[in-house]
Structure formats: structure tokens, C-alpha cells
Length: 90
Image (tube, rainbow, N blue to C red; front, side, top):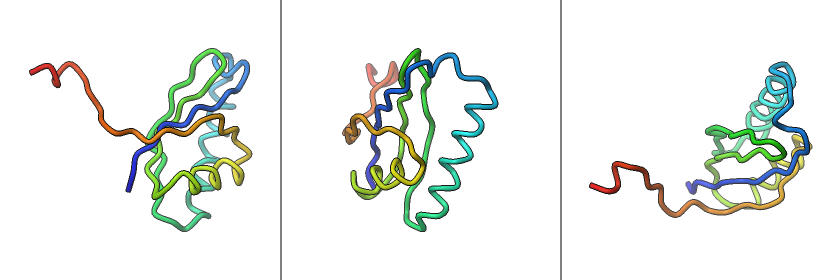
């Protein structure tokens, strides 16, 4: 399985209510379940006008399927090759 970061342009995302974010989250979980594939939504980061999502999937096509079924924009998908953080420095 590969890890991907997905950019979703969603104007006003940073102003969404908790209820709206919960609804989006529920839709995502429901779509993952309905897909019936090895697929996981890990977490998402909400900025002013975008949502960046981390998903684990076999390929980009599965990411696009998730977006289409959930009516989520998919503006870019990048495979995560490495993760670094302060611990990486030694």
C-alpha cells in the first residue's frame, strides 16, 4: 500500500463549522466502506481554502474513485515517498 497526499481546493474550508466538517468526515468514511477495497483515510488538514488529506491506497485511481463517489474535489495527488521530522535530524 502507498501513502498519498491529496489537495482539495475548497473555498472557505477554514470557515466550515464543526457540523460541516463532521458531515464531510462521515461521507468519507462511508465511501471508504462502500468501496470495499484496501483503502484508508488517515487524516486531513484544513486551511483557509484547501483541505490536504492523507490516504493509504493501492493507486491514484482509487483516490480518484473515492473523490468521485464522495463528491470531493481532487486537485492533485502525490505519492508520499518519505516522511521527515525533527527526529530525522539525529
